[in-house]
Length: 538
Image (cartoon, rainbow, N blue to C red):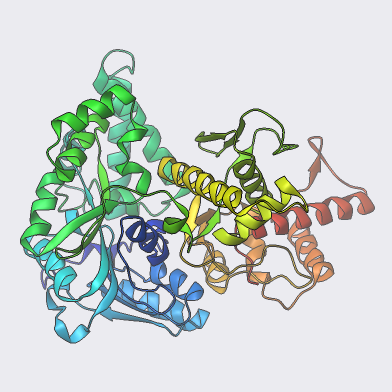
């Protein structure tokens, strides 16, 4: 993969230091268990990431799994050097990064419980793609799970045409940042040349231009996403059935997709789902047909060894999820919900997904989880708390309790299958502070990244959190050395240096006492938000 002639594009413009939530062993293990497998325990697992960039994804995992071992491989020396510097600064000792070609990974690396490769398969030459799958077979534990992401057809056909146009338009531009800027200008020119209401292509180009603008503002001030995807030297999408066949040749089998909701035909209109089931001969066929219907552009597929017995019929009972912890990001439509009141209660996630139930214990459980979100609660404890809220001091009979457990489990699995934002399952409860302490401490990795002007930092739930300017400046000072009064002095200095502005009703605040009161309220609100985003260390 390296060359003595051409510079490594990832050395020229390193990939962003980001966490990728779907790659976390906990999320992967949940899906494997739902499919009837017994994946390795997450707390002490060994994880290999192929194409780890700076290792930020592994570093974020390692903070929450101090007894696990993480190894990252990347062929861009600059990225590995940057990652090792960050690991030393943050004090993370259970991550090892290696500057190495994937082609050189062999049996000496040892056996890993989870192997992940995000953003490599479609962007590498064929020998590397084959080697990647070979590593997933040879270096994966017998009950281990591999994660591989890649671009897919049919959705990428339209993007492919735009990619080819941008590559041709920028063929003589050597500087990578200027190439990205020129490609962006060209895409905007095409949007002006084609009205969105004239034809489908015009609508697509307008949507794509908006996506580029969003990426530029929120994710990619250094153009890395555009340069390493649409403008990458290699970007080879595949049909899902082609990927599945390639894994079969390497002694692997397709397990599921993450997020799990994307493998559920029940999320399609009933007539569409029923027709697809009649056309599909097996799981691979069904997945491919769903890609056709959804015009899919990207997949995050989980793989296991071919001798593993996958359970394709999901069983949604307490025996399936009894070992899980449960959380939600949904809110009840009625905050004053009474679980014993007749009727249906609805819980809505931020992206619009809704879970409705008239089962009192399920209503009580979801209402409780929403109140303590994003804290995860073991299923048995959740059932007990919900029953207490429904039955009070009158404990339910054993038969009633068993029935409530079955209905609650079924509703939770239904919510999880529809959207992970409605119901989250965990094989272990993520560790973070649910509230704000007297001397708040933010995750050291998030502090490090914020100090280096990153707008996106990983939470202790392995999710990306977008920081506003106030939070980004405050995070480096949340190291446990300052109480709230000292932190108020810090933000007062920010205001004095005009790094933040304080206004009320659109006007600058000049009264010193009012100024300090507003600053204090803003600080406390921000600290509560950081806790809810799972950025504070317990």
